[in-house]
Length: 155
Image (tube, rainbow, N blue to C red; front, side, top):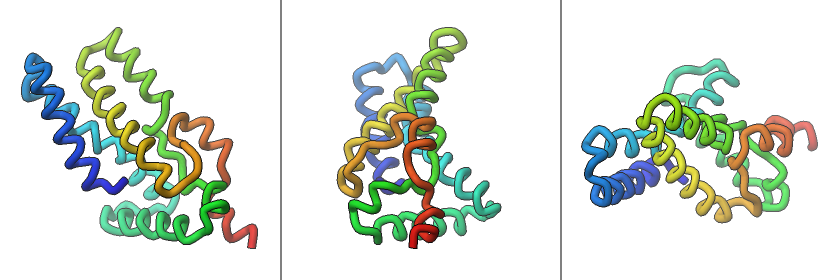
């Protein structure tokens, strides 16, 4: 799902949560909203680290180019590949946030809420392009799927 869709839907979701639970206040609304799309910073970091490129515009363009490359493959072949592990997308981070919410601060529950909403959108949107569900576990995805660079190696 494109970032702009996450921003728009995250805003609507945060507004609904704020309407139902006004006690979270503007701060809670803001944390849920921001975490509903800033979770995707892992896409930026993964690409930047892999390519040693930190210019945000170049990283965004590179991510879109990588997605275009993946989507150009036949669907059956595309299902075998993964561009990179999105390390904030997975049950592992959600469990850490839950533990932090219980033992450290309820603010982490707000972050968890935004992350869960984002993950739900990604999971619902994924069948549009793949015949699989990934990003449920970063560790599983890392070992399960071939890396995008391996596409050239198979030719």
